[in-house]
Length: 164
Image 1 (spheres, rainbow, N blue to C red):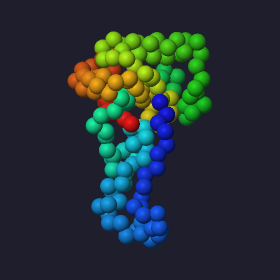
Image 2: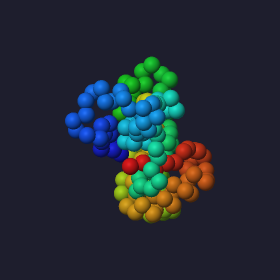
Image 3: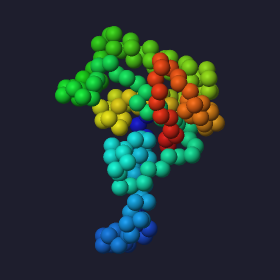
Image 4: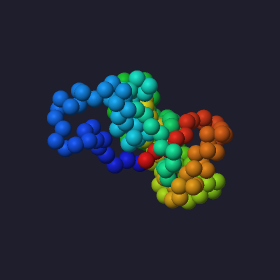
């Protein structure tokens, strides 16, 4: 899922000058929300980010962080970027099997799934992220809580969070 781009208001008034930005206290600057984290549930800066990382308390979409392992792309390889998006028949079958298993298991256990998106971005903060959007927020909540409590699917352990 490619979340829509949103802007984060820095100034409370439209007529604020550029110098007003620098007058914001250090505390206020760190309270500004990280746009990357808000949009994708992941930030390349991690804990070193100067912006606040807030995780929503509810959403119809959950993030299964680093859940899909692409057998073709190893982010440590120099040519990893060239391999993104290119799959032979065997690799496509691997992906299709993964997708079908995740989709059917989530629907069977938690409720109707509207869409699933698997991230092939080679950035370490996004590689293998799986975004699952449920029709009902209650189903997403149950899935997020349950998946955080259990190992599930192909012995993979990952972090589950809500994303907007």
